[in-house]
Amino acid sequence: MLSLQERTVSVADIQSLLTIMQQLRNPESGCPWDQAQDFASIVPFTLEEAYEVVDTIERQAWEELPDELGDLLFQIVFYCQLGQEQGKFDFSTIVARISDKLIRRHPHVFAQPENNVVGAITNIHDLSQAWDSLKANERQQKQLHSALDDIPQALPALSRARKIQHRVAKVGFDWAELEPVVAKIHEEIDEVLVEVNLRHQDPDFYQPRIVDEMGDLLFAVVNLARHLNVDPEQALRQANHKFERRFRGVEQCVNNSGKPIQQHSLEELDHYWNVVKQHENIN
Image (cartoon, rainbow, N blue to C red; front, side, top):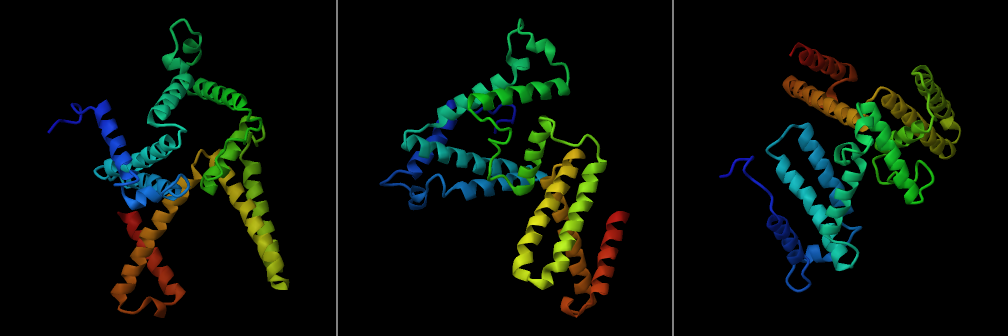
């Protein structure tokens, strides 16, 4: 078997994958499920495969990662086949577009030696400014006049909030200090509680207002995460994993007690929780 260093992906390898996709979509001899799909119907599968890649990386399950990346690549190949069938684009179009974009957005790497851009970028800060300038020019060329125009609506809400805040910060709409960012969170908490305390008067009226205020609170928390250079989506996933791990520990304590969890008081379960936390800290 060839070593990792000796293996190369040839044009034939890519063409083989594209041919498999063509056979799956063949109207006469293909797979009925693949034949029935369109751009919209496979979007949920694309999102699922992308999250499975993320999950595999976070678990550092490196042996599984090639399979998961292959599943994600298959989604791209599927879109290419649909595009080719409809005369919109094909795989070579996508390769050409991303190649051109990478070269265009990295002039400090691919520019000719006589280009002043090479010497102008000497650190990450310079690179970030150049990157933002290039993307701003691209948005202008696409006649996207707002800084928010090309932020995908389908992004997870936390990620989209962070991206919105990042964009507006680039044009100066941002606090320079951390104190007002934190103060805004406390303000939003107070506004949530005002609506909660009034909910008993008319639940149908106040529940939508609570949802609205909770959205403002979450948006403010995302802003704090951004100021602390924390990805809120990643932080919340990490918190989910931690809670799940600890609650499984609580369930183990319950099993050891011989008493069903429903017969435990909240105080008992909270004690188990603290025991699990202490055990984690010791280890």
